[in-house]
Length: 170
Image 1 (spheres, one colour):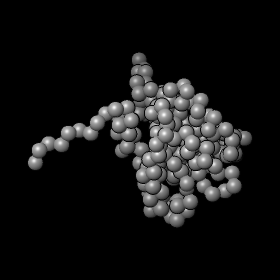
Image 2: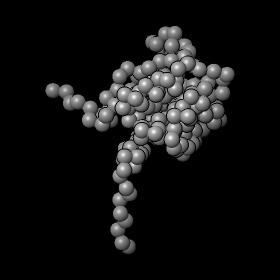
Image 3: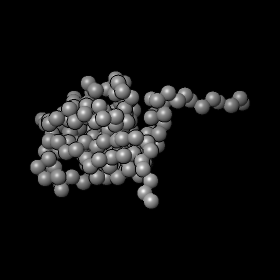
Image 4: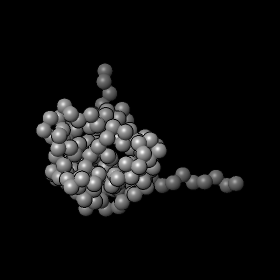
């Protein structure tokens, strides 16, 4: 008997012109979807849109369908069509810049200075969903998921009203 996901919905949006033309070229979307499923989220197949395409519209539709987590991959660099951060920022009621600062720091240690070109953003939407824009590279996604692994439960608990555990007296 297969258990049903209990943590709600999550969505993955792949921003890649080449993968929009041929979805078999996408390697990061399935990785993120599998990571979310392993954490007990219900996740459909990744949405694939072209760079500069309907990123905001796709995320807005997922938020309207009660996604608690939305992770994008791609479109965070500096090419003329890399505009994922610009599409996502207006959807954030609260930015959480430290998330992508840590992803860039890890990338710098592994991939080198090109990791600093990622302009990803993270934050909380008005409905309480957590949105993160990861780089489109496999290494950037691995770094991002490693950061989120230690953070996702805490951020969702905080957003949905959980307080900090009381400190014991010395």
